[in-house]
Length: 146
Image 1 (tube, helix red, strand yellow):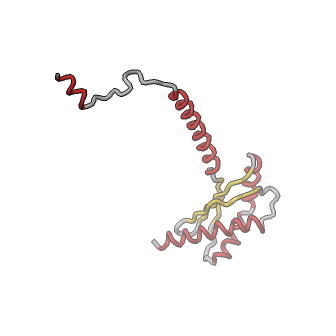
Image 2 (cartoon, rainbow, N blue to C red):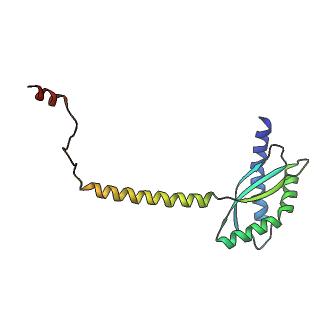
Image 3 (cartoon, rainbow, N blue to C red):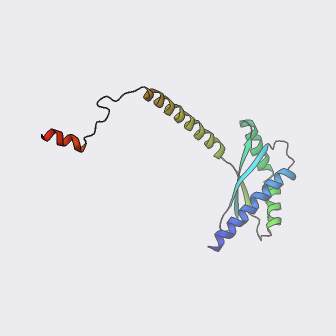
């Protein structure tokens, strides 16, 4: 659909614009080391959701969220000018949870690797409980019929 393609194209442009504005125009001392990870625009081009990550602790995230909230007006007007739309989309910022989720996944994968290593170590000296080859073979059946 044409509307969705246009919204996606504009969302990509908004992502770049917001990143540039945060780097060059927003002079808020609370603004931390921010990376704009994604932007999405509704089909009617009225609302933009901007996703970001912040390098640092919980305090850095809180300060950055406050700085973004206070710079929304500037960002909205600059995005509106740059895009040339009749109505500037409202801008909402969302902390992107992807890095935290990725860290949790890495921890779980490491636990799984360690568990696999323990199983492999335990299995290294193990012997089968029964015969080394527990399966019946064709020549075994012929011996039994004699």
